Length: 401
Ligand SMILES: Cc1cc2nc3c(=O)[nH]c(=O)nc-3n(C[C@H](O)[C@H](O)[C@H](O)COP(=O)(O)OP(=O)(O)OC[C@H]3O[C@@H](n4cnc5c(N)ncnc54)[C@H](O)[C@@H]3O)c2cc1C
Image 1 (tube, rainbow, N blue to C red):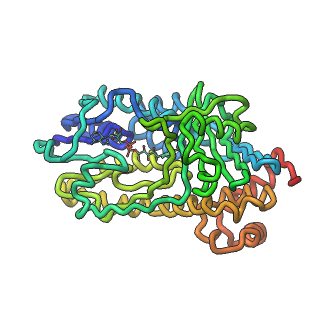
Image 2: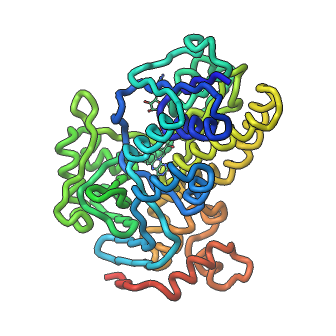
Image 3: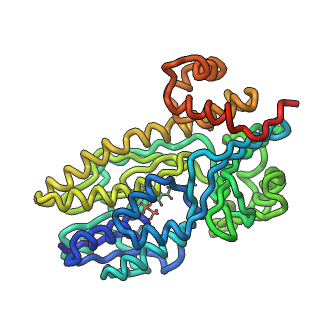
């Protein structure tokens, strides 16, 4: 099969690797508009389940990803002047730099015979007329999808809060949350390591806080200086590092959750962020993009012609990711409703932070929800798990005041 993959992100690259592993005779080219080695973003998180899958499907790239990742098994929550709560030895999490991940995948794809053409922008699937299959892994702003928007039916829900994706030279040993109260409302960040020299730091706040603090008007340098001051307690003197817009302004965004009515049209199929996005606060977008690649390869090798295979991919993958999409929606809403939770006693707030994917939580008074978790036999399994952690493993907890 002659395959053209548009976009050199995790989705396309992993798809090309698994396709080649299943059948080395596939003729595959990946087209990436940017030069090699240039990408956006910092580190991304993932979990053990994904690592096991990657190691099983392609041990070479799986092991390289594992060796280049940092691990943590503790979480720290700072709520300014009120509490620091630490949970140790929870589920293990992993972080890897986006650059590193893409380097590993590109190198592995090449070693399997995939051609990668950098600095090649594809704006119309018509440019790839000789391909049997065109895989649109060109990200959330997919041009290939937008050309047929009437068919794919993309729908964007824009999040209320503003966020910026930063790096720092501070190495966070634990997954670290910091909630800071200002005269204009709360601003928070979460940081996690992804390499020997850097960590990721995602900062988020409500639009009122953003404007009140002047972050909407500050240029990149002034904005970072203000954020370094606000998060001084966790940065220990390390700088925040950002990516300015071409005009020098800071790069703040509102997250857009994307869904598409349809995921394929003739021989053009969407994967990864081109097909769907999930709020960054559940750290799952890359894992889902890789999962799409795996599902698509599986559907293509099921012995059916192309159209039924793409229909199967759309049907099965859509259903598979539904729970992650819901979890991401509730998680984003939790942060949008932060004032509802942030003044609870620290351990309650911390428990509910870990429960932010719950669909029940937005509808139940937070203290009642917390008590239900303590008393109800029928409360969700995951709530019990967090309780267990808190009961046995809270290593440090400073009471309010
Ligand atoms: C703040 C933030 C934090 C995140 N943290 C995490 C995390 O911790 N864990 C996690 O799993 N996920 C995380 N994500 C999500 C993750 O980054 C994405 O879901 C993932 O990168 C999607 O992969 P993709 O290959 O579909 O698209 P992308 O990574 O966006 O790649 C698309 C590629 O296509 C190229 N391209 C675009 N248009 C064209 C064109 N016309 N021609 C050629 N090339 C083109 C682009 O240059 C790009 O390289 C986060 C996202 C954000 C915003």
